[in-house]
Amino acid sequence: MNNPAPSLRAISCADDYDPNSMPVEKAREVIARFLTPVVATERVHVRAALGRVLAEDVISPLNVPAHDNSAMDGYAVRHADLKPEGEVTLDLTGSAFAGAPFKGAVGAGQCVRIMTGGVVPQGADTIVMQEHAKSDGERVTIGPGHRKGQNLRRAGEDLTAGQVALKRGLALRPAEIGLIASLGIGEIAVYRRLRVAFFSTGDELVSIGTQPEEGQIFDSNRYTLHGMLTRLGCEVSDLGVVRDDPRLLEKAFGDAAAAADVVITSGGVSVGEADFVKDLLNKLGEVVFWKIAMKPGRPLAYGKIGSAHFFGLPGNPVSVMVTFYEFVRDALLKLSGRDPVPPLPTFKVPCTSALKKAPGRTEFQRGVLERDSHGTWSVRVTGEQGSGILRSMSEANCFIILPTEQGNVSPGALVEVQVMESIV
Ligand code: AMP
Ligand code: MG
Image (cartoon, rainbow, N blue to C red; front, side):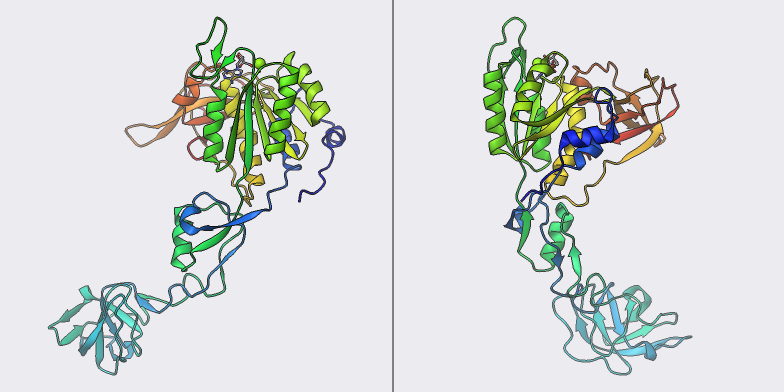
């Protein structure tokens, strides 16, 4: 089971960071120290394994390819029969098609018609493409210039029997599913799905289907969280909206922590609200409250409630998505058994917009990465960047990441972007 984790508060003190201005990197680093991946596994059919995480190495039971075979349609010949200069004419003695091998051997002065994937017959060591040969159906004439062993795929060239084909910790994509099937393996061991329970906090929230009264708004965070968690392959448990009431919240935290590996909430961690939730979480577990030096997404709580990990995300809908992408995503993948956790790719492109940015915190502005008619990529900002404007996330296809020390950005400057589509 879980190793005893070091105390969050002890680490906090030893690290001497400022919880009121926690750098993004530092927060990631502290969280990473507390993550112990799931160990339970289950066996699933290969077709049901899409997106699951391999719990053991897949060892190839066979050579791939299993036999020397032809990479081309043409003729299987003995290289020694060919002339370095000038033509030679060989007797055509049979054929080797994919799935229907030639039974005999190719003798001196002979050749065999072979199709792509056909097993190379005994005696032959070279494939001559059909475009480089003339056949009258009985005899085949071949010119000079052929290399011994050309157009042959060797047995075991891709994988040899006993070799690790796929490593534990890999999430299975269609390519891996196909590869496993190509080895004749029908069932594999994967880690059990990570169980994540989440709820929204706030007296102002109503769920869809309820008529909001004056001052009430529809809860959207549970829906974006549901989507992001599902894409990450988690088993999700939606615990609804919980009022800002200590008794109800205590029960919700308790129920969630008992049922899940990870508890995620939104709202209730900003100044004022935090004090109240803080007392509660101090009672139930070990939780630290940080003000991350980032925008959006400043308040963030992280810790343990019993054996469950806890992420207290801010309430603003954009902040929820940004903090999820930047902190929760990596943590959930690590807990799910992914090893290594693939970093979110970032790269630099010119920014066509002027960006406002104050030094002192990392900003995650919402951007649209687009290609002009010459095929050149650039990024523009989505417009208003308020942390409540969920439409900015919907319009965006990337984050423009502006580092801590960065100030305003002039049009044409290179900025770092992180593509969203590949994130979850
Ligand atoms: P809080 O962090 O609870 O102070 O919330 C910050 C802002 O986010 C407030 O304007 C809330 O109304 C809004 N908010 C909080 N939770 C949600 C939610 N689940 N869906 C939509 N907006 C929310
Ligand atoms: Mg609130």
